[in-house]
Amino acid sequence: MTPDEDVVELLRQLVAIDSVNPSLVADAAGERHIAELVARWANGVGLAAEIIEPVSGRPSVIVRGGTRGPGRTLLLCGHLDTVGTAGMRDPLTPRVDGDRMYGRGTYDMKAGLAAALIACRDATDAGITGEVIVAAVADEEHSSTGVQHALQHLTADAAIVTEPTELAIATAHKGFVWTEIEVQGKAAHGSRPHLGVDAILKTGPILVALNELNERLRSAAHPTLGPATLHASLITGGIEESTIPDRCLLTVERRTLPGETTADVGREITDLLAACRDADPDLNAISRTTLAREPFQIDRDAPIVHALEAATLATLGQRAPITGMSYWADSAFIAAAGIPTVLFGPPGDGAHAEIEWVDLPGTIACARTLTAAASTFCS
Image 1 (cartoon, rainbow, N blue to C red):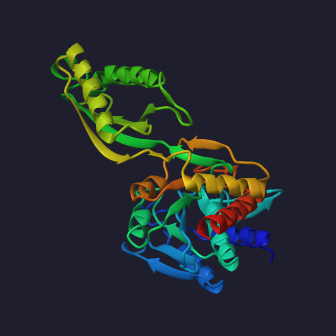
Image 2 (image 1 turned 90 degrees about the vertical axis):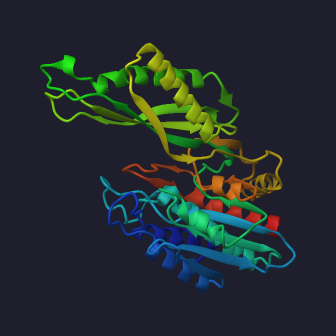
Image 3 (image 1 turned 135 degrees about the vertical axis):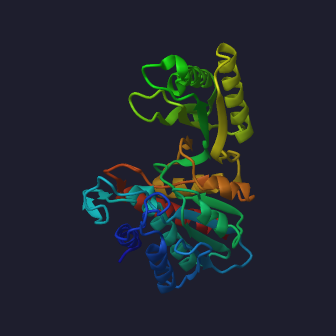
């Protein structure tokens, strides 16, 4: 096979393996079988592969190529797991239609992982004097335990996370904070509302205030990420139709920009609830942060950005645009470990959707670009 055919065939093999994250779907397959495939493939093409499994059944793979000589080390990172397949037709059967391959994980993000593995092999075969590492990690779709464990086993001079970016160079992405707001009421018979406190109705002004906050957030925008945003994700409350609800639980997601912290969002919600209590002294509401991930940003003039720009010019015939991504990715953890990081991956559509596909010429172009970037950066 040619290198171009290799990346498509490797992608086909990756997509055919069920790697749904069991933290998202009970009793799902997890990453064991796909990790074994990656390790076998790497060993078969002359690369070194190490499976790390700090959590049973949730392995990641560290693949190493190059010479470990005087050159620099480049980390390429992609995740093994996918979200669930509910509603999909034949999600594990990779189907090619024209320039597209369909199937769960094609776009998010087995194409990017396949491109990274091919680039590691081809840069090694080209005789680079440094090292290329591929971290094929578990659990990105839930808690990112895989990349956190992998970073205990490696270091690098720079990193490229191969999440889908439509062949643009992403130098920033948003973070997020999940906040639960619990409103307490008092249960009573529906025919005697004066004896109770309706927790769901008490939540109404909080929702209005959250919507007003979201509108205010739109007044300031990041150059590549746009404004911060907020939305109400989940709401539960009540027992039955004829009972005044004694509790309402609201979950809010706040997407954060570089420079915003989890503490900033916590104060924002605290102040919002305080204002709601001023308007309604009987409001009994508390908030708590349940999960947070920091935003990410790298300097536009960082060496890895310039190296990737040069690689896109050489392989695509033009410099890739510099952009930011609205989603969160493992890049934030890698950058926090002190490794300058960018994102670059193939085009497609349907992440987490019932119809998911990746562009095959774009996947081939991604592999070529990663190979060129590694050959230049590491030598």
